[in-house]
Amino acid sequence: MTSLLLPVPLTTNAMNPLSDLAENPFPKPLLIAGPCSAESEEQVLAAARGVAAAGCAVFRAGLWKPRTHPGGFEGVGEAALPWLRRAKAETGLPTATEVATGIHVAAALDGGVDFLWIGARTTANTFAVQEIADAIAASGRNDVAVLVKNPVSPDVELWLGALQRLERAGVRRLAAVHRGFPSAGATAYRNEPQWQIPMELKRRCPTLPVLVDPSHIGGRREAVPTLAQQAMDMGFDGLMIEVHPAPDQALSDAAQQITPAALRTLLTHLTVRVGTGCDHELAVLRQLIDQCDHEVLAALARRMEVVRRIGQLKRESNMAIVQNQRFSQVIASRLEMARELGLDTQFVNDLMQLIHQEAVAQQL
Image (cartoon, rainbow, N blue to C red; front, side):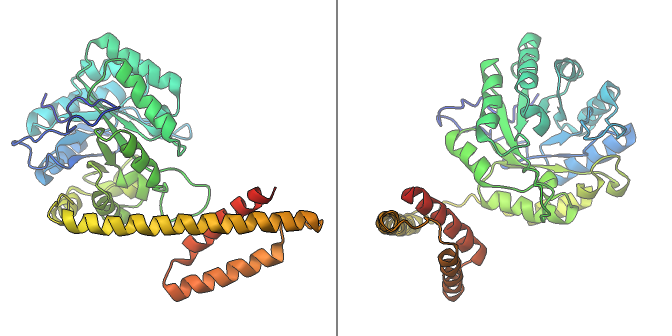
């Protein structure tokens, strides 16, 4: 198998996790694409040809599909393994599929699958992750590449813990996949991006490749190109995109899958941020950011000192700490100031809410 992911230590930044493969037209970013589910041999081969023609590096297809409710299409399982082998033989692309149990791992590895990925529900289950890690270790196939999707909750520790379990089992070709987080309210996305979570994982593990799954974040095929570009703008290492030759007839996640032609268009217009020609100017601007942050924190420290004095005065006067009318006035005036300064009012509102919470805590 062509090695697209080099060994990745989770605690150092001593090596580049992605190889520069001359035979791969898109070694960076790492592009993985294919249908949500393997539904038929014809569908798998048509998708694989389209993914290969678009220049992707890995072909993905789900064989075992965890569904929220019983009765949904849960994949064809091992019966699809010959389809993946034929797709690999015809296109030359390594293949990837999701695993959730040790039995899945054994079947996928025996069937010649090159990449395994662990889904969000499974990542959240430490026993399941350990079972998968143990199954890989028992197989002797520690060279297999394993992709770990973020857990369903925005918990970077749980995500990192899953990666560490695999690393301790001897797996060295690891990557993470950000697919967003479910939200209880109505939002523009199927899963809220909450970009700060994958960015924190990237900060802690600088050599770990972190890919983005714009299909699951967006939930609508129309959102996929924009989210893919945002991922590149933020410096993530690749994309995992759901591609189906006839998305509207897909047996799972039909709304978020795109056609091979749409994939080619997306990749043609995708801008990968790899420039290094502005290092000096960037350093100067970052110094200005540092200075601004120093001024902001110093101002917050002064504000909290005033808050503590107010708290002391309230105690001496037997007054309640929280004065809702005053806080409403503060919010209204700060939002008006935000509009005058061209700042996002929702951001300023959220910021003032946090500052108020800390002000109350300082007065207790």
